[in-house]
Length: 527
Image 1 (tube, rainbow, N blue to C red):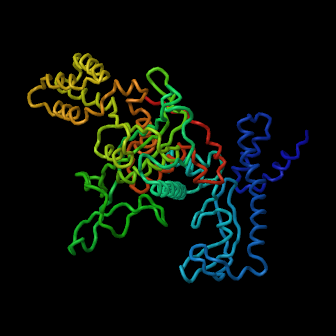
Image 2: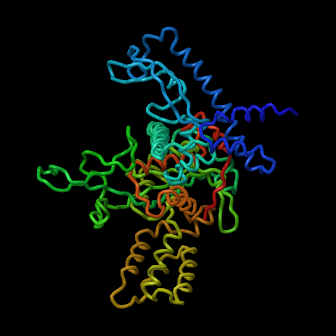
Image 3: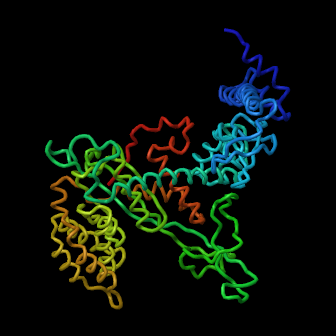
């Protein structure tokens, strides 16, 4: 076997920019070099020296074709359709996984919509204003849904050799989140066209195979919709203005700027009155000009019962659709409805809505899944009972666990009235009793959703373990890091992007993606 490739790399080593890189490359040819050193050097140098040069030569050919001789004097604007005149032939420099890329292309200016565009950039899939190649933006987005943005340049540099600024990586990830949201809104538009009747006149996706509960061939398919909410910290900035809202000097609330052209998640905005940001906590001035508040991210998991595998007291999902949204329950519910229709929901299918007994969860079921079976999450009910028991017997008392075991057994038999009597018999310590009253109110108001014996006989789930796991995996693992505070629009976009990855829909955000083979079923543990 010849050594042409190795010799070619050795010849090109002196062209490297720094003595450190040259020394690193020469180390791979020494007798004592390990496999890890050789692999890292040849991967980085082979790509930079051969792949980078080949890519630049290909771009040069495309530029020559685009510019022509002379350059095309006019091009059609993609926004308004008006023929636009040539502004100039400008150069552009991009960071890529193969090093810096430089090419020239014609730039046009539309007089009607005042838009500046470059057809070659659009043909190459390069985002306007970006300093990174599409492949590097995809890597930034993939790391961004898992790691803090400040760490991403180091992680990317470790494997590719390029070190873009973390602000550029953040902008790339958040713009990818915008594209993920655009895909979701298209699904919402189709769902609104189909309506929320019982249930839809037709399905738009592939439904579950077999029957819903796996019991008989003549039974209806059952689609389970689990919903829950979890909070994460957001921030609102304060700054002194010359004139307040009512024309007087003082402080006024200014929300952190959403990502637009600048994309800065930490930038201040030159206006605004804080509308929609919620109430500000008492630590607003004490936190260095920033008020910390908590926003709820609503999470939903949609799956067919036929695609849930039971293993002991736990289950695993062969396929599921995850939805996350920060905002009003109606916006979230439309996204859940769209996910259900994409899963193949049709008029003859049964639907189960499973979650806690929050008012907004009941509205999701009543307004968007009329006729669905509403189940109160068994473990949420047990949490209320546990709080009442600890209030009566004291924290750490040995009487709490035996009492709670008896209540769980009664709940499993759908004996809600017996549970209510047992809660009434609790004798809280002096000055307490709030938890007992709250548990009684919870049981009395939602007893119709606690027919657990009947639900289990039908093979239906009574615990929302899938959505609880979704809250942890989608929201908690990224948004609830120590000291993390998010601008609300930025956090919502990042959650949409992470949901697209968990749903194996990454290729809808990055059609060119090498990760588009992530369509395999992902097993998810549920309680």
